Image (tube, rainbow, N blue to C red; front, top):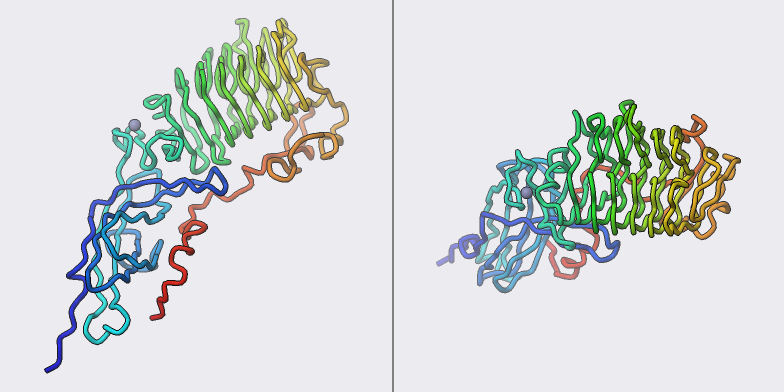
Length: 417
Ligand SMILES: [Zn+2]
């Protein structure tokens, strides 16, 4: 009598409702890997499985991710899946059990599938801008990829965020009143930020204890607005850090008011700004400077401005204004033409060709942070060669390949079907 082959699928189990998780990758420090947690109980008849995730409600076409694993005991598996962070999406997980070597005649490979839909992780709805990945912690920041999700920061103003793609804003932006979390732009840009006339603030109003990194702002045509007092990030930034950010915007101080305008903020108080630049057109009736009107007890290092600066009846400056400078520390920073001075340090450069030479920027990291590129220098109305940030020289495409190192887990399992 011939033994009938057992379908091994009858003997393993996994949960259909998968929870989304994030695993920080240590190598780059910045790379975030999001994916699914799969509570899984293997069959006693085999330890050999293939996990595959497909877009849509069926397991058809090419798998977005596929992984072969040896599993001997019940556990929750993590499978990297760069799913859509902008809106809920349905995927299908297919798990195939393979017979153990030597049992091919008795057991047969079999597959179970389960469809699941992504859902917000922050307790709010997707329509309200709820985040579809992360928990807001440093290890697992909320992922921001739409205007609604950016605006939703106001609901989680102390959390950690990571922006996954460029975002183009439409309509008039209402400044987020306060923020004390961290925002990693991921080397992406926020386009076309526009606030109401006479606003006090731009993306944010007043920010304390926050950090910003790898975030760019670009105005294409439209201006940020005729603000009363602000810079691109906000009005007063206190005890913050800013690293590897740039602003390429137009901000005009509201007419008929004593407006203060700086590239990044009106005031960077007790704040550290590094490896950042402003290539903007700025105009403030009272104060106007390339980076910030004030840098009170603050530090600026490895920064530059090639901005057009006008107005400023009470004080202007290449990087910060000359008005009431309280203990600003500015090192290895430069501005092109424009105002004759900037307190606390910094060097005015009058020859645009010097901006294209690494030797000008002594102490700057041209291996990891900067590279020479092209920047529109508003102060002279033309493109020049100048340092640009390497963080922004990447593609924005979603990458469905397995994260670096993932293959290592399946190497050497002896899969040879
Ligand atoms: Zn929320």
